[in-house]
Each structure stands twice: as C-alpha cells, then as structure tokens.
Length: 114
Image (tube, rainbow, N blue to C red):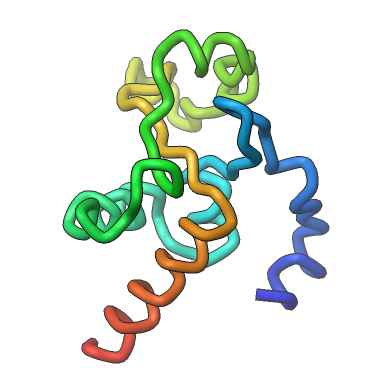
C-alpha cells in the first residue's frame, strides 16, 4: 500500500470527508488504496453488510453526494467516447476508520481463499 501512495502521490487526507458528523472515506477511494475495483469492494461490503455496524459503513444519500460536490470530481468517468460512465450510477458507501479496518480483514480473508 505504501508503494502505491509513493508512485501515485496519493494524499489520504484529501480522501477524508466529514459526513453525518464523522470522518469517512468513500468506497472509490478505499478501493484505490487497496488496488481493487470499486465494484468488487462494494460486493464484499454487500455480502458482509451484517458485519458492519451502521455507524462504521453507510450509503450516502443523494443529497450528501450533491452537498460534497462529488459529481465534479467524476468529470473524467467517461474515458471512452460513448454515453456510458458520465454520472455516478449507484450511491456510494462511506466508511469510517473502524469500517475500513473491518473491510481490510475481510479482503485479507478473501485473498487467502483464492
């Protein structure tokens, strides 16, 4: 993980948002740090949602997404010249530090099973 940060100059502080009064990272940013697709990370969360207390992992509302002006950060979603990928299609997850630690353990188990 540290190699990724050095190579890509990832600044974790820029990935932390305060939502609902707690500091969280978005699923897309956590996926980037763990070098997995956001889709795959969300599959792990959905399959194990009962393991995450609601205060550690929650879906953002449309209003929360708009309030953070996240749409402007996704201007480059459409890398091809087709009509797909122009907007966020699913609500994102917000993960607290504890939620990220729990997710990390789940990802380790999945990698060990492969």
